[in-house]
Length: 344
Ligand code: AMP
Ligand code: MG
Image (cartoon, rainbow, N blue to C red; front, side, top):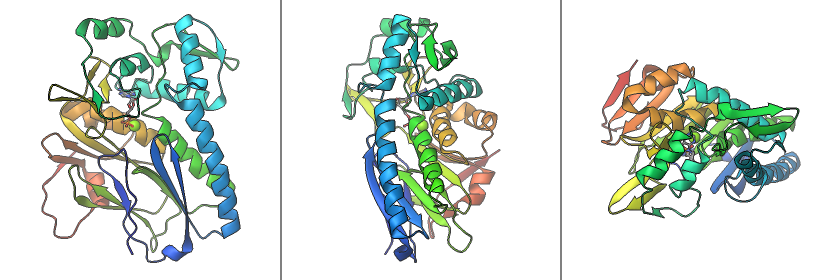
């Protein structure tokens, strides 16, 4: 029986299409980061899997608490200190996320900017209730935040303490935390000796340990329904998608997606979704978001700057663009008649 892994957040969603040996798999489900997270492990005895699943539960809960952008916790405490010019202690996980965010803000030419929390809040996107009902923020208040130019480059970490030289910096890990958590989940499973596993966070996922005769098969859906095709994972790889049709602000018939262009403070336009395959889930997560911001003109250039070759973009007309490397990976659904624009 085909197993369908449903997505809450992703527009293109990944499905584990089928497994003829599903009786050799064990499953756990968690609800974290506003998403159903499913973990599947293979070749593992029940007791070991149960212990690993219990550990994951605690680690996911801790990450949810520490990384949440608006529920009171470690991150809101740090953001409060930033706005008051104070220095505070920084947990190791957040320290890692700040350092990676700094690096990736540079590599994406500022399209990924984890210091954009105030602008994201201004648009009403610090919520779990979608769609957000307007109004659209006024141009003067957007401009005020743009002029303050928050950047993760303003953040200084010293001896386990962190402060910001710019009070406008407010961390929001919405575009990176899920990837971080998925990488960590697979690392934790590996510590238990579980090397053959899939962690699927609402359609964003990473698998490890699949073999040529028993790969992890991931389906890639297109916005509005249907499956474009599948991708087989045999090593350790992540497949992440960012899309604009699930989370947005709605006002006067207009839709304003939850992904903002840091250059303008405005929601992105022109792209429906981006799917990225990468070795690291954190990188795939950030890249999917940043390439939506980059848009039709610059997505390929930014992908290459990030060292990524396997990328698929669907624009707001439903046209599909993909790299030759992604095309090589994609196993098109039988009988499907779609035009693929291969770019390099
Ligand atoms: P994702 O669903 O992975 O594309 O991440 C979107 C989330 O990342 C949003 O809900 C915001 O919290 C945050 N975000 C939006 N725009 C950006 C951006 N340009 N750079 C970094 N984070 C962003
Ligand atoms: Mg992302």
